[in-house]
Image (cartoon, rainbow, N blue to C red; front, side):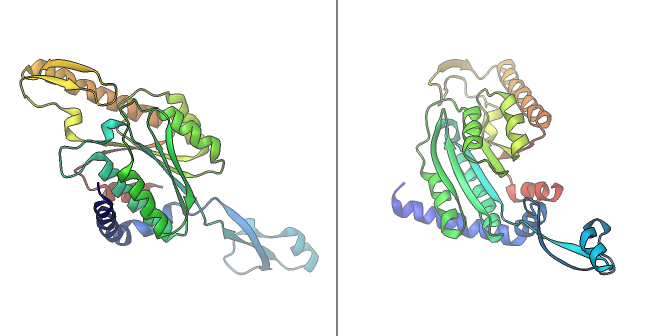
Amino acid sequence: MQIKDIVKKVKQIEIRTRKKTEAALMGQYHSAFKGQGMTFSEVRPYQFGDEIRRIDWNKTARFREPFVKVMEEERELTMMLVVDISASMDYGTKTQLKREYVAEIAASLGFSAAGNNDKVGLILFADKVYKVIPPQKGRKHILSIISNILTADYVPAESKIDKALEYMMGIFKRKSLVFLFSDFQDEYDSKMLRVASKKHQLLGMRIYDEKDNEIPDVGYTLLYDAETGKEIWANTSSARWRYTFAEAQKQKLRALEEDFANSSASFMNVNTGSDYSKLLYNYFQKK
């Protein structure tokens, strides 16, 4: 894309996602992710309705009247967007490529975080980590992240989710909100999901096109794997062949959902033609 086209695309995404964010997601995001914990602020006299567990017993004993500790929420969080840029993500048969759909979801999440004064960072990966944008605050930073997702060179290589998560955990020590975007076409080590989920709050988002799950009857045709470069001839007119392919995809999805559940991580299966804002709204509500 030309620079003017990129700028136009980013602005379009900002306009669309800001409406969705302000209308539905912002409040749910704030309610769901209230911060890393509580920090001591001050001590004041006890008031009716205060929690007993907040009583400062030392000061209460000293002054012979009840005092309570006032705590403040540690509001600031860090959100990490971990995005698969393997070649299969540069694909789409509907109105958007997977990469464009990811950019839009990332924008909604980013603007929600920015509205709560949280930092947002980005990791782009395929067979290795290709780019890291450190967490920062603000609208301009979110627009930069959107642009990077749209304009990245999508790599003809198998995605290594394990390497991306391992890298992230190596440089980001503090507990973060991690959104992992991929079509999960390639193998991964489920142990790494468990490790990442223990350290961070992890949501895996499988971004798929409807043709990922079912191949139509187009006769005897050459199928090409954009990541490995492998080619195979297939008789897509065969109902048995199409059924076997679709069933294999369903089994792969079930295994993926099971891996995330066993890792105590969240998972979302998102079609590029669906309204992701409703899915995110429900996710935030559950949290």
